[in-house]
Image 1 (cartoon, one colour):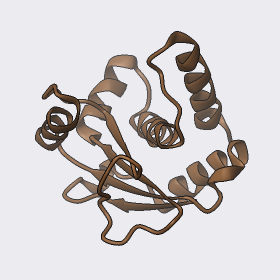
Image 2 (cartoon, helix red, strand yellow; image 1 turned 180 degrees about the vertical axis):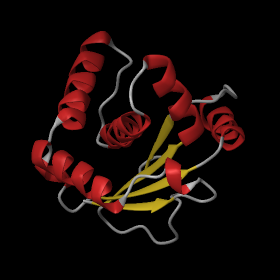
Image 3 (tube, one colour; image 1 turned 60 degrees about the horizontal axis):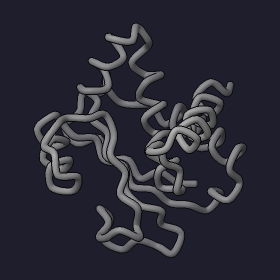
Length: 147
């Protein structure tokens, strides 16, 4: 699996290191071997941009932690997506930091959780129905907690 991450204007303190990204990839590949050759584009944005995207694509202009856009749904952030391209993930580090503080957990742990959460969405997992949510969140926490 390969993440193409663009941090944009996001501060270095709010980014994940290449080592942490590699660890996330290995954890996901271990649990979901079908992701071995997958490619995902990740963009970090601020609150106003995540609100705009949420409004444009989901109809409600509110801030959120992560959005996922399947390659099957439309244009990608990358100019020439390959055949193994799953789609795009958009994370909002400032929203994630605020959420982590409210939940009294480490910011980096929550950022990892959102990378995993977005990836699971691109793989077809969802949490609209209770049974689906239990399955998705259980797998998410296994991957986040794996060492």
